[in-house]
Image 1: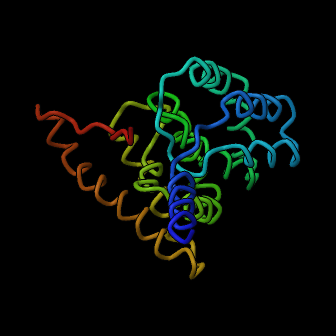
Image 2: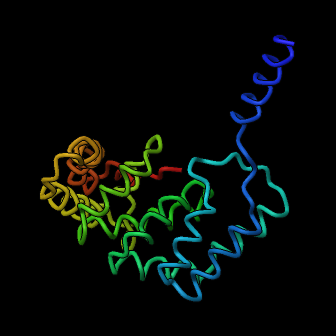
Length: 208
């Protein structure tokens, strides 16, 4: 009897440790509801169904259809609008959406979050800390609106300055990680002058 109970416990623990397949239909539905009305209630319900860690993409029809609905003009525009309004739950939602995004979808989410760094660095760091995903600090690098390295480097410098203003003790570690990522890339900006004389220009990195 004891062996049977032990076996059942092991099986149950094994099942718990496996990643559950996201409910793509519900995720798409909740994000669309948020896009139509980004109220606190709709935002909270969307957050509740989003995976809390990076998913393994299966390429299923449900997954593909959900991503098409989520990575669409209206949801992305509303997300950006709400993030730039410094809506905390919308910022949390964008970080969670990174768990189901790759390629251009992930880049555009990074761009939205990157725009937050200079206007609300403390909020940015707080939600990035909560996301706690490997390499998440790389979102600080994504810049839109220019392909010129000079402009990208200037934006990185301004983001670094904004992050340095954050004094909250609990955010010090994640702040230093984000600043470190920027400083690493800023070191390549010193080659800009050399690039003008024929050396290849560095390009802005992509997290995915």
